[in-house]
Image 1 (spheres, helix red, strand yellow):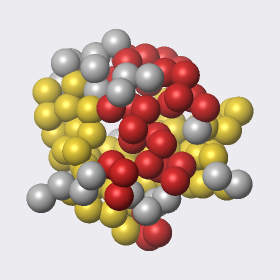
Image 2 (cartoon, helix red, strand yellow):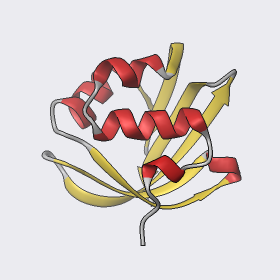
Image 3 (cartoon, helix red, strand yellow):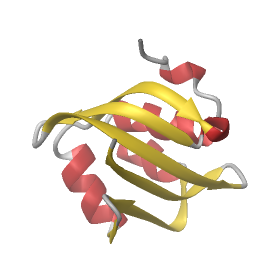
Image 4 (cartoon, rainbow, N blue to C red):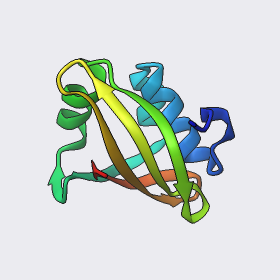
Length: 107
């Protein structure tokens, strides 16, 4: 069973997932703070390069399986044209309604 995006608890995380799934780069970056950081499987990555490769140029998509910690921790089936589908964990750090950092990796 999946959680519909519009039912995610945290508005910033909801906007992040909606923008990712819509392949909407402008909306995606609008929910991040300037200088936002991220990591993939424990290694810090360049946000612009990583999102271009793993989301926008490869049509990334998330189906949310569960959320915890007020909506700041998700488990999702993530798929893109490069890697196919995998079960992933996402962690979001939110301040003043914007995401300052997100971390992802295999779940």
